[in-house]
Image (cartoon, rainbow, N blue to C red; front, side):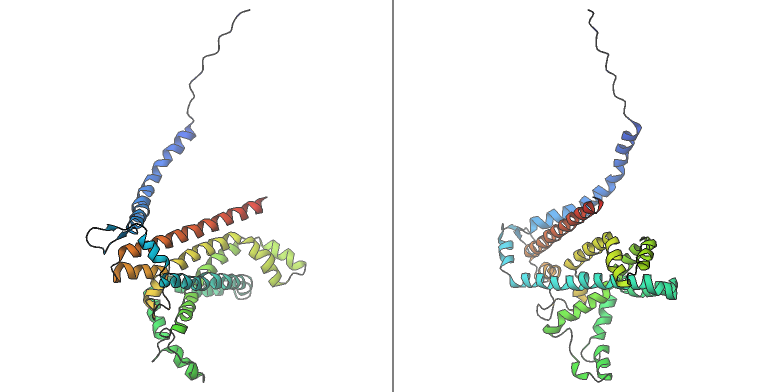
Length: 314
């Protein structure tokens, strides 16, 4: 019986594909450096500052959790988050529902009866507030709802409803509702454009088959349209929720959080402490809590979307 010696192992040859994939990683380096410089480092510095007492000048004094203890006892902080819920209704719930309905009407009815150009003109009109500078839009709306010579009160007087004339942004009881109405006008075009793009990829034969089976327009809208553009609905809901939580320029231009604290939101509350009260440590604590809330909500959204897609693929 002769013993056989094992064949010498050959060194593994690297495939060209693996080497190429590793080589592509270098192209990510500029983005990674930029992300670290613009996002990660400021976030870490803000978090560290939230544990200090600092006026923005001199050396910060370490105070531990005192800013967070103060934060959770601060009624203005909780009021700002309650106002954020109202802003979410104005920037997410109403524009998403109304945008979906309007997009379906423009896509299914207006474009078929009056042509693509008419539909595109309406779409551009709804999207126009999105391309206007926030400062310009805020100034225009300030003129419209001005209590002395605003267009809204003048129109109410013209139609015999002068008793409804009001200082819409100056009265704490109507200021938040007025801001919400402006937010709906400002935000509506974004979901409408996204949903019209989503409707363009839906197979028209599905609608034709349902129509032949006697399904009404609303039944096709509810059972086919909404079901097939779920990815677009997720994207719109997530991005507008984040935008609503960190909304700042519209509040700054329209009300500056007032009257009193009637329209204050977390981002403007942080701004007040950063730049008006020179309480940088406390402002950093507000910004840190807001960041954590946004990350948590985004994680929940993405998790739910992944589960929904897995359930749809199964």
